[in-house]
Length: 422
Image 1 (cartoon, rainbow, N blue to C red):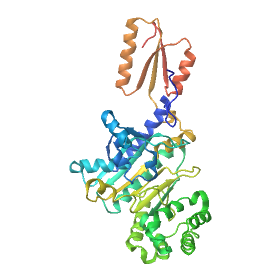
Image 2 (tube, rainbow, N blue to C red):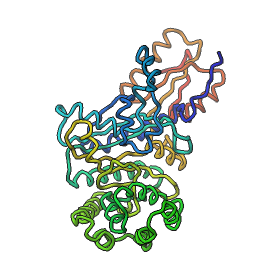
Image 3 (cartoon, one colour):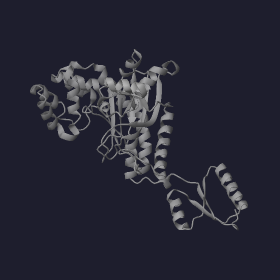
Image 4 (cartoon, rainbow, N blue to C red):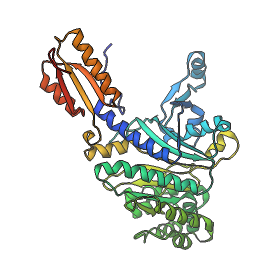
């Protein structure tokens, strides 16, 4: 049998220097969110197949890595055609909903949860997109007020400002919309409720095919031309940032509860008081978000020069009720950890700007047992003082060894021979 040294397609090996960047970013994420009162939780990598394929995961349900049944259950499954009983999670939201339903009697209300872990999707790998990747989510469950949205957006904006400032980026854009506004606009244009989801999917392609492309795609679905033109007209004159109350009044009419626009305005004003003035916070009526489980506010973060979002989320009040039989308000933000790492690497993040106090002791192979004891005693003292210390045999190619250590952030490199004073 031939063994294969490369990882499975769409999955990665990480070298030590890459892991140091990843761990650095994770520390910043954990530290920032902890200051906002989020507690870290953990859920299993595998979930029941019924949960993963329960029509709440959108397009991700087509990308499940399924796990076959075992033993006699597999034999029965082969006969019935149902051979999978579980699968690798494709996001952290579905597992969180199950987690809350299972543990709610022991959890605080509201629950402010931070979840970091690997997820898996049988997707086509490309830059910033993998089949196994780390996802980072914050969620607030049990708070139906707009305070949840304000906290989530402010915390995530602050975290990204902190991370990106290390590579000189201070500006990015937070787009905010509401699924109820999207539905009210579609209703005012003349679409039927059963058409909304498909209309939103087509609208979501606007950044790729343009507004006229969206119009043609809608007409190809045999929607009434009058409804299509009325709907497209709502997006024609979006120069600058529209005032959310005026915009909703002009496009949605009586199809939208007035509190929705007023609450959106309060969210925008409140978050602006909490974040860096360099962060652009905008009401974006074209923002859709792909998941059908969103019920209210939705948000997404973009950065100039990259054609993917770096974070996104929204309110999903109905999902958890499917697991426990009673409703529970929920709102969350998912951070594109791998995409953040991609941007930092593209912009030349350097470890030496952030690390210090790393010492390497390179010991000659002829050193006596007594000298080795001295070396390890010194290493122990330095580690006790908070330094990072590695002890290694001195190699014949000492120059390459030293260069490698320097690339890995070691600022103090000492060669130790029998007569070296420590």
